[in-house]
Image (cartoon, rainbow, N blue to C red; front, side, top):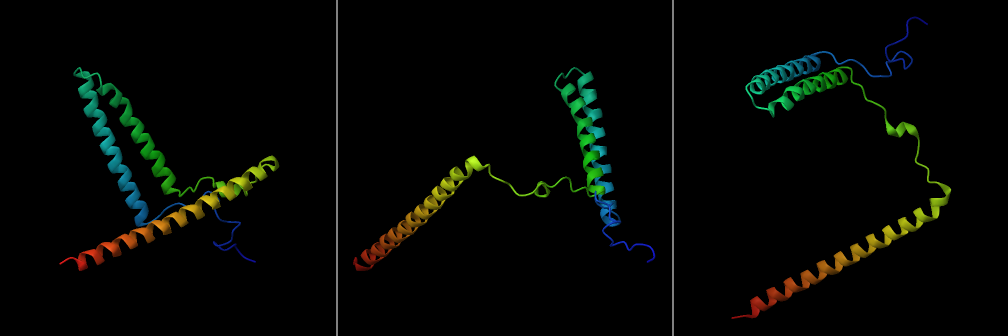
Length: 142
């Protein structure tokens, strides 16, 4: 009757839990390293662009976008957001007018699979017979 337990589903965060401990530290260090690389690359490309390399202007705008993406991924991984799951939407339902078409397609797929399996078995049998024939001919040759 006291306080709800942490395992109580009503108290759990539906969006996920926050990452803690050594895993969080590793994630923070990875973000810091990625941001250092993005800032260094940005400064390098700015110097090149101001020096007359016109292609570097594209990279001047690209590296900050990489940094923003790194921050976005860091946030999602830190908070362990699972995102929306498509399986929560429910089972797939075929429209009534397409049920017969679906059954015909599934039957065709079964026939193709059976044909491929039979052809594969026949091919393996023929290859085995050819190998046995070649061995017997090489054994018979003086």
